[in-house]
Amino acid sequence: LPQKMRNFIVARGEDGKDADITVATEGDSKTSLLATDFFLSARASTGSFGIAMSYFASGMGAWVVYASAEMGATPAISWLGVLGYASASAGPALLIVWLGPLIREQSGEEAFTTADFSRKRYGRVMQVTCMVVSFFYMYIYLVAELTSISNVYGWLTNQSNFMQGTDSESYTTGIAVVVGLFTIAYTCIAGLPASIVTDKFQGIMVAALVLLLTIAVCASPENQVSHDEFKEASDFTEDGAYAAITLIIAILCAEMFNQATWQRVWASKDTKSMRNGFFLGSFLVFLLMTFFGIMGLISYAKDPESYENFSKLAFLSFFDLLEPLPEGWHILTLVFVTALAASSIDSLQNGMTSVFSSDLLAICKAYGFSPSLVKIISCIVMVVTNGVAIKQSADRYDVLDLFLVADLVCATSVFPVFLGLLDEKKWGILSPTEGGAFMGCLTGIACVLVIGLVIDYDTYKDEPFEYFWLNNGAICALCGTDTMWTFIITPLVSLAGTVVFTGFDIAIRGDNARQPIFEFGFPLENEELANGGSSQDFIDTKEQKVLEVDEVGA
Image 1 (cartoon, rainbow, N blue to C red):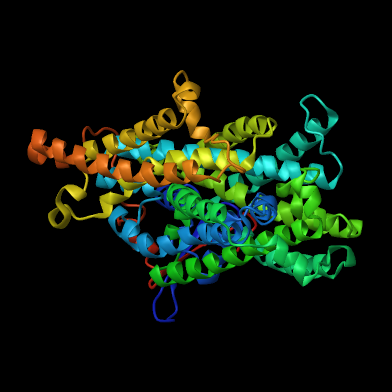
Image 2 (cartoon, rainbow, N blue to C red):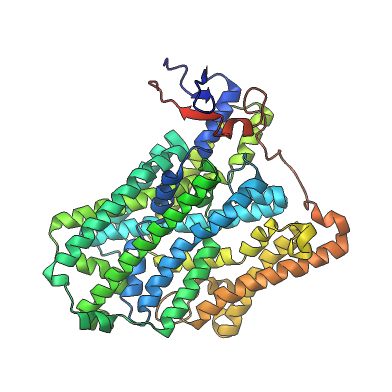
């Protein structure tokens, strides 16, 4: 095709019949809007296998190399920690199998994220609340991922002295810069469709590399342990149960605000593809997390004394198994973790920009701007956000600590947002008003602060928000009853606050309580994308396929 006819082919047809092909040029504003929408959402384009590989690859970043292994190499946590982490990581997909079709139906096919659901169900206040919580979680995830990939390269290349100002810090920060720029490059060029396509290849590659690493690690004589040694290292413990409960609640709350995952709901061709894809993706995630947990168990069984006296660290236990292997296996591991990191980082980059997509497209339509402006703005947001995240990753925060902070913030708001799925006529005050939902979020935050003061008043009386770091003095960041009860109580108090304040709101404002607190801006829907029709006309997969065409032709 000529370069000027480079945007999209819209092929209409049904039941296998020949389709009428129409090609719109770049100057066609309606088709340009459709092209931008597809760039941002990959709407209704991905089947079950693509969704499965995308969820698997995008959710399993470089952090899995040592986060789950730490559970296995910590004997006080052991099997329950490993299985709890694996179940917690796989669980959100199963929840989305149930919630995904409901959110997609209530939000409309024009939506991009659950922030759009919040606007349509509640109003601007809850939309902004959902955007802020989602962006915060994904940003923390991005910092954790960049920290992880930098650390892995440092450990495997003997550049593990992470003191600030040293050559090793420059090296590991350089790794974060390269990975960040690489992922930005292809996401800015091709958007979410590129992320999903690369996820397929990365997911398959990760599965193959895990199989090879399993054979190599377990076949090495230095890594072999006896049945009695492994039995001594593995146990079902009380602390492991506490950690498992904490992980399951924390990750479920947090992943409800991971818009990179929710984007796959709208990217799926239909409900069946979405459900099958998330089911398979969940199973693959469980297997991968369990694999690294078992590697941690083997590492501890091989040399328990070194882990007990901290001459070896639990979160580095997987690398203990790699050490006796030839250098080629170290290189293969770097390829493995780079694929993991890239798939997570590009998904987070798209997810963070997606919360602005609906309003940006509406502004372009209202003022007659080119929809391509949205792509430019999205790229700018990616570059700025990654720059800040790379700088913070150089501080070498503990990855589990980072995740727990973000998880706890999400726990304050998960019920206020998703109780919006309940029908007000059937559920009454359990179906929140916008005012009730917003106050429920604030109640959750207040709950965390109060818990911190109750646990250690002297420590947190001057800086109560420091408790979000959950420094409870346990054997690990997510261990102990204090952390567990914090994650149990916080969402429940937020739920109670939402219901109570909804009741007050209805009592004070009557029927007006069911209306948005205030409204401004532009309509949520991107109407009339082309040919005078709605976007729904363009995403019905039984009647139409939208195929992207590159600059040199299809």
